[in-house]
Image (cartoon, rainbow, N blue to C red; front, side):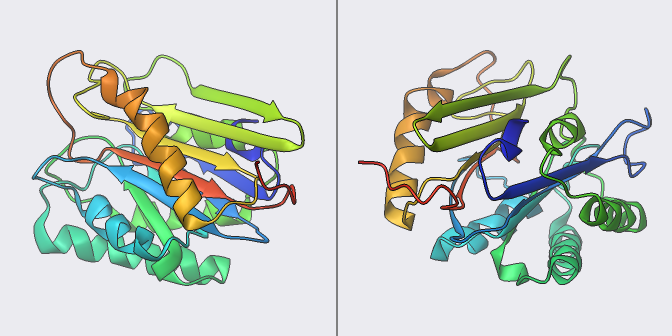
Length: 235
């Protein structure tokens, strides 16, 4: 179930041809509401990939309707062209979902220094939109893998509140989130401030304590999204 364990979320993962292996490489997680709150933690590396720069702008107002993720290419160290590619992909997916691109986070992972093949990425994103499903969390988790040996997924439930998550990352684990992409979903009713505080506390007591090689990625992102679909506000 992964990220779709929480009520109010759909997801998909498809093969777009970004990976030579032919494995799944494009994913979308879509928040159906009734609330659309998001919080995120990003790399503190001075060199930030285009998707990180884009997503830092998206997260400012605390609204996130969806996230587009790809493996097979990091879109890092690609200059202004890489940022334009990220912008283009966000506009494309947002239009297909009927949302604003300003509310769509973008995450990429893979080789650094090369632009993404946009024809393949956009075709894959289009396919992902049409295959969004309430049971699509497992496919989404498969699509963000790089050197991972298996998909990383988890779910938890506290009364009526559900939490789901998926992650990718192998080998490099720090300092502070290095080479990680994480998407966490919850159907709890939370506002921007509550969500941001919860994510900061969780990262400080988990991901930010790990260190395997002392390096940070250009693309590290941990995203937390709340749909409010449970109707329950944590006490």
